[in-house]
Amino acid sequence: MPLLALDACWAQAGDTSPTHVIGASVFKGEEFVGLNDATKHFHATCCSACRVSTSRASVRCSVKRSRYRRPQKSIDLDLQVDRSSSKTNVADRSSSTVENAPSVDVSSNSSANSTTSISSRGTVLQACTVTSGLMVALGAIIREASHVAFMEGLPVIDCTKEISFGFETWHLELLTGLVILISSCRYLLLRTWPDFAESSEAANQQVLTSLEPVDYLVVSFLPGISEELLFRGTLLPLTGNNWNSVLLVAVLFGILHLGSGRKSSFAIWATFVGLMYGSATMISSSIVVPMLSHSLNNLVGGMIWRYSKSESPQ
Image (cartoon, rainbow, N blue to C red; front, side, top):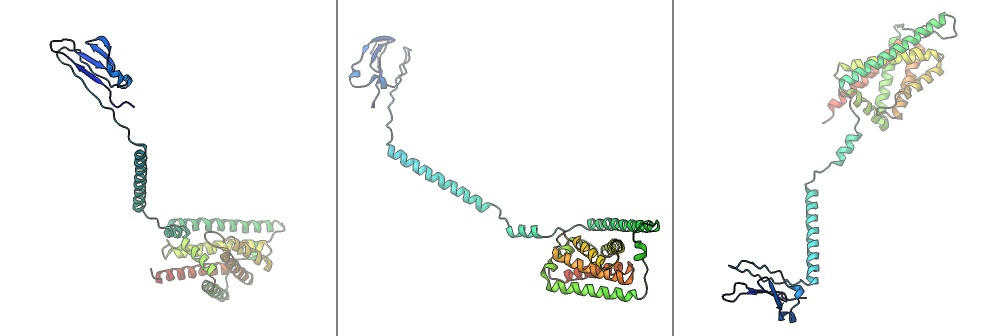
């Protein structure tokens, strides 16, 4: 490795063309004179560049020294230090990012997902009105069609004759007993059957939470009247108007009450209620008794739920 590159120039007094040495070559002005003896001591290929001004007034010379290489061990040590410091900086930045990141409440998210969706007041009233209207229309059409078919001599049971809209005084006793029985059974099941209590709570929260007190009359009587007209006033007489048809219609009534947060326990309860309403229909031969009983039971259950929510601590 060369230690020093020779690069010099000089001028004698009165000499207009300075003599300069570049490597092992000697020039006078721009004319090549010969080889310098410095080639014995220095390598000509390792000399630095020399800037020679051709102006006669001034001569600028520069001598550059070559730099020594750093030992390989010190370079490796510096690289290791740089890598460790970079890793430390990255770790510091990542830790500060984690510390400054907003915390996520997992429990609140899981509870929010498990909470039953609550419908608005207008949505509940609209759905109740539309659904009840469709069931009333379907029940009325089937009843009238069965009457026309029976009058034409077709082997079809006349629903209007089997189950009428008549109401007698003694029906009040049957109605009162039915309301007390069903309301009492619901209260006991809410206290003793957790799965039924959970299903009932989910259904009540979804439907009743956003309603005003006066709205409870709408969501109690409209479903009570329309469902009984369709199931006990139409399907019951069409399937034979006997105790077997009471059970069949009750099972269908219970199955249709699944969904919207209501589990199989609620379907079992609805089947039991359907059996009670079907029995009252068979005993009275009137659709009015199950209609009023169903509506009053809905109203009692809804008001008790609202009262319990208002009294519970927030």
